[in-house]
View 1: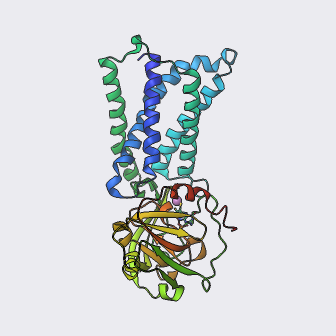
View 2: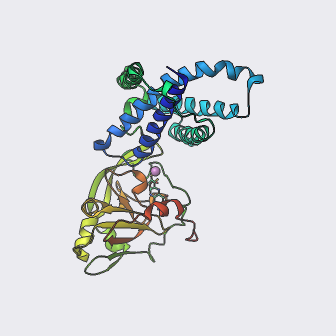
View 3: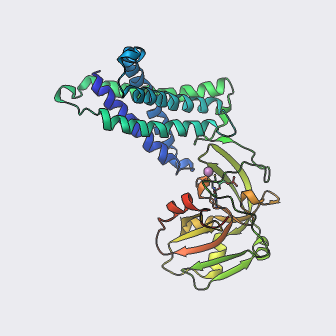
Length: 349
Ligand SMILES: Nc1nc2c(c(=O)[nH]1)N[C@H]1C(S)=C(S)[C@@H](COP(=O)(O)O)O[C@H]1N2
Ligand SMILES: [Mo]
């Protein structure tokens, strides 16, 4: 394949893994699993043009007297690409390392570095394809071959995981590693960006339910904790772990009924004492739980005491902790995308 076409093949595949990679952060539900397969197929397919390209540029790289000022950038780009593929494969099988940073974090760091480096590369080295580079039928077959190679490796990976009983055999379809299901508060803690609040004073705390409702509610902890609704649901963090628990608390649908939903209600926003917030469409919100307990234990501080959202089928970052307000909205709240990055900065915690 002509060098310029190899470069373009790499750009397109990297764009595909980037989009599916970011997209996969929104998915925790089995129905959305195709995006994870697409990510894995494109990621494995990268190996073919990457090997091609590395073989071609090797002489230029090993002879350091042939370097120009752009060569270090190319080397870093190659390292990020190799790192992203290697950490992806390693996590799929070994699910290592655990702790901080874990294999998923390393994969994300390599992936983000690759996006930045390739963008620079494109800006500085981009050569538009000429008529001579126009792909022919052979190239189309090569592309199919690459994707076929990626797709064929998926069952091979599962086969290896099962044959050797590797940790990857027990990973979730999201890639997440299992962590401490049904063990009360003993599952991992993930705080995103700046949220490190002091423990919430339960005696002063109240839950406010307001917005597109017939009446506003203000409930104290005793009123909330007397609720006995339970929900078995899996918290799946984009940081690469999942845990399934029996959660106990108050069904959001019951709160909304008590407050009397108005016709124009569309979304329900869950707001943390730190300013962190997320919202769900009304039908989905009704089935969600505001939990005071995990298993038989009251939630501990770092898991969001006194009250946290349990949103089945949603990624962990949407499971707002330290909830103090439920706001019924008549339209979507794009500001939630800002709040999850900036919360905790202005609340004095
Ligand atoms: N207020 C608030 N809620 C939050 C977070 C946060 O940083 N602040 N982190 C989210 C993320 S990324 C995850 S995965 C889950 C983790 O819940 P846990 O710490 O109880 O395991 O909480 C979510 N809820
Ligand atoms: Mo998370």
